Length: 485
Image (tube, rainbow, N blue to C red; front, side, top):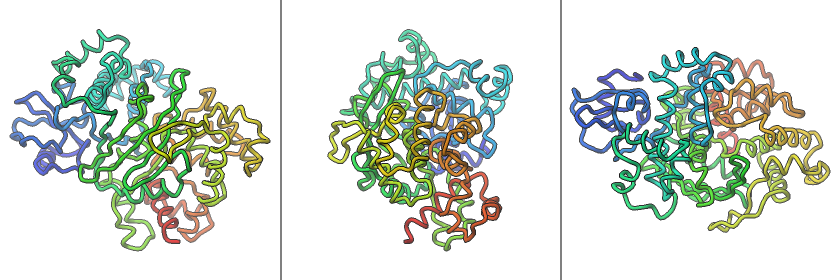
């Protein structure tokens, strides 16, 4: 348990949102498990059993609450400085489930460099359940959210959740939750008018800083920040099929949630999109662990004590990496200009309900196949053209994947092996595309300016107390530099 039982019960009584997703409570008198923020009457202490994860609660035969909806709770980032094998496996399972990709334990173990028996053992020790049980929980919770928040047919929900047949889906759902998928939809709220998904986060959350970071890097036609809403176009390849659409994410601070609307054209990849939104907005971060480290930064006291630092990323790892490459040794404004030129030249037109969203960012395939001379005429240096096309080829061929579930060191090695990509670029890609919380681009000129030194060894030594959250320190220092001039 992350908390002892007495402390967990106090957090439950207070409905403390800071503990949302850090534990779940099973109520023996109802057979239901809830988030600590559930608004129903607080159960008696003797009727409560506390669990670290949803999978543990379901393994103990509790079913998810229909009111507080454990499936929308923030996850645990599972990203300590060593990123344990069991945590890598959990991230890989979650990614596969939400992307509706097949996953086998032997293949996963091979990717992690261990035997499947060893992986089962360490996974059980770390997460309290077997990998198969964890996988089933993730699939069923995704299905529950899709059934509740979307109009997708039950058959499509089953496939999107990773089940190979409707019969297997119905059987698993009934066994775990003791009612059928159609009963859930029938007994729930009225069908939503559009696909609108709810995703929770733990407060505090510095919404202003996160949206400000996106606004300063906004590319016309592809994204828009308006009030508390971030909108963007989406290009997604699923099993060789290209899908395009739009996505709109609105912060609802009073509920500690983000409400996400998605175009109907992206319905087959809703699960994967939810995972990427969680990553891009860093909804699984735990401020209780991160903010005390941010208080150590050499900034004026009000800035050091500013709560809710997050590590914003992007929905598409390839697009993120392209932006990082074009940002080599130039200002944020200059990088945005280059990205805009690339998007205007190679982007795909799209119709959306929003006048500001008119095109989809260029695909890896289109950049890989482009004439280098044409890219160079956009004002992009030859070395960066080579880097862009090498990156695009690796992503298009599937030899390089850029998302939170990708293994860190092999991905860093693959990036550094590409022409024109050094340690700074690899570290920033790891920070923004892989959501690696301890990334440290030591040669970054902004960091050097903020820390008052051009000696990378010196500033790396200064950052040692900020482990394992150095990437968050980078974002806080960048935010200070970008907003103080």
